[in-house]
Length: 530
Image (cartoon, rainbow, N blue to C red; front, side):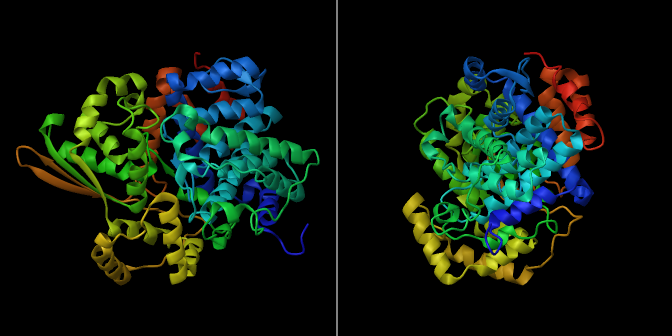
């Protein structure tokens, strides 16, 4: 070990020493909610033909084992079961997000498979879920300003799965550090062509989850990794971050990443959830109307939402038929589906539905504009200031850093951090933001509302027009609507496989995790037909 603790040594020690009694009840509750949301996402996708190649492939090369594969009669070994389940929860982008990253795919499925394989109880399972989120979320946040973003931070599943498995195995601080370091020795770098259109995207979380689990098993048997691999001058940060945010690693046990949880209530990009809510509100307020009655939809969104749309639209244009993969990252396409179907559920991202409605979606998309609104981006940045690490990171960025970041984004993604046409809007937003800025530190017992606002104006051909702004996703852990939204998601998406009674029992057992046997939850899941 090194004279002064490295990033991974600090994280490894914390994971190994984390005890159930030290986890605040609010964090435990968020972990239970994440488990239920992730199960619902997997059940929703289990009915899709997009996931069949994974199951057929596993049938050819993976031996049977004792770990649950969602909505399948067979069981696999722990690594193959986690791989299959992570592909399911990724398939429709119906997952959840924390500060920072879509940690659930590795946090839930690696913890579950390792716990099931070891015969561990639900308290051990949930503790591992917490540990994985806290480690993976911090590693993701530290690389916020880099060449990848959102679900393309596939590297977080390396450390998430390693932390989860190490916790279940009860590895020492040193062995856990090595597990994290082994996992990051050859980190995944997601490429947009393989993520935005083809079904290879389904492996984005699965592959690193499997690697991270193996790293923990190997570390438990004596394999070593390099503890300084994150901050070494040729290490992780040098390749995955334009400007490493070291402060994002801090705050273990004083700030809990899981309390920033937001459960998606619509399959698709997290940055689009508030726009969907606004559209549905306007649709209800303006009364029944047909898609042909829509003259124009104008959506103002954050920089993250508009950049995701820009990337996705480049790839979506080449596909005449919209697929379950390329539907999720173009906000205009998402909005068209909401207007066309009057909702956005797992059924609207199935291949048959999309194939039947692709022409209508394309026609409606032509009447939808998506633009960046600097005041909404600043709203998101402002909400992050409630987190001390976020505030420290924002404060550490100087003028030269901003210039370098703009240069890197322009070179790598042809992306402008600040466009000339937005200069006046930025100036106004910054002035208003400075006047209304408030500081509030998140405490261990409170949820953290991370805002991703959208402002939508809907105009009909008869002249009626209305505008709606939504700042907080309804599935946010800090929202009073969160539990109802989660219940609705779990019941609607698991009932086709488990029946209404089974779905209700799954929800009840999920809320009891940590207080009863893990088998009580798994017994419900195993009732699903193949």
